[in-house]
Length: 254
Image 1 (cartoon, rainbow, N blue to C red):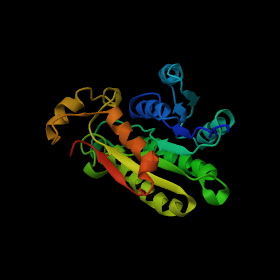
Image 2: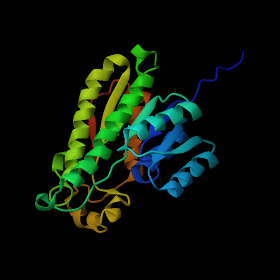
Image 3: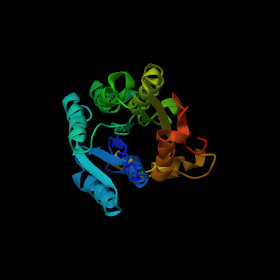
């Protein structure tokens, strides 16, 4: 009797060329996902992640997409449809912090740019995933994980108020869509990372941020992208089959 070979589950990770997104892509490929990771400008980094996955025997593609552009997000999903198949899992990871500062220097442009990528992009990506996953539309169901931040609760004062506000919106998106989509076969959860070693801090102009703030972490250390990715993978997995609407801090108690 021949063994039934099931198709690989298909995961899209937005902003998957580096940091938490890349860690999710690698871990997902190891457990059998076909992975599509999006990037904006870092093609070399994206190609490197894809090469790591394929060299290890996994399946992955990199797709250029601007999350602030609705048409670009739609094209991302269309490319995945064509090259891998219909998505069964989505990690909304792409995000930008915006300019460092406080409320005195905030501009509508800074707020708008951050919200366009972090919030609008996640809304559009979620909409496109639902079209393919929802059981009432003939889909198989699926899981969505939003990469939020502890800044949604801590506020981002004197650093990135706009980033904290955008992550607060992502938490609300998580709660709302978990209620809407549960009856349609889709679970939605979030992780809220704290101080994590990625190059986001240096790229945003705060290269010593982790060292300055680690004293406020009860566990006494910063976290890694892989530690966040492991929680994401749990939320995507069957082990979390009755978990939806959860927002899990990955922050060492901070």
